[in-house]
Length: 333
Image (cartoon, rainbow, N blue to C red; front, top):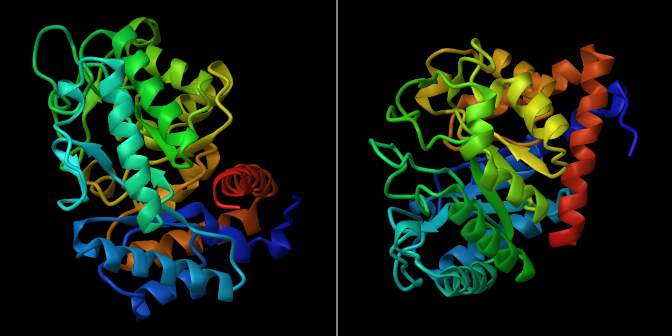
């Protein structure tokens, strides 16, 4: 689909996946859909009261998007199991990735999770975690990873990806190019990792390479600054990481997503205008803004402004829209 700068504005919001505060289709959510024309929603515990309620909420949002002439919405959730699981009982509870010891465990998790997500209208799971913990020493991800052997992490991640996607749920591997070595929480501050590309390739990148070969629907970028790859920008805003390493070197052609842009790692250090500029420059497809507030409208306006002002940005935007449309046609059509 060719997108010129003159007709790009109605599609600017398709680059956004946003959070909201309600449990029903209220005015806030309608505004995100009918005015900002967002491409996706992400659900959190605050949006969830019961299986029937969340099914009604998602159905109402999708119906409203259709009435507004929009394509179906991505509807995502973080349902890793263990410490990160937005869906509480009566949804099935799993102990998390560190407790999985066989491929059968991964298949059981992915099959059950996919079935329950489909029942409530969710079409994307922000899982699996593909980070590799160090063999010794602390890790911010210790309670969320499959382990410290990159081959095992890759194997288990691939099983989860293939099983989720065979059941019609888009999988999103995270957090590229790997945050298992870090100890600082990027929800609060911007961590630095002083490691070269070769050492990353020897361990951290292996699960992501396997995930790309398994045609994972999406890969989420971390909010970590990898000093020897890009000393200025965190991965989520880095051309060197998102475009040069993930797209060019690894050949990944699926969706590339940021982590939540409201997190302290980026929100404390960069303006929304700078964030959007960097994301578009780096060929990031979906910008996650997970909290209600002015950042969502500011991001939509920044996308529209950039693709009007720059032919190069308009071309990158067109490529992202094509990837978004391809994913929606495959899983939501």
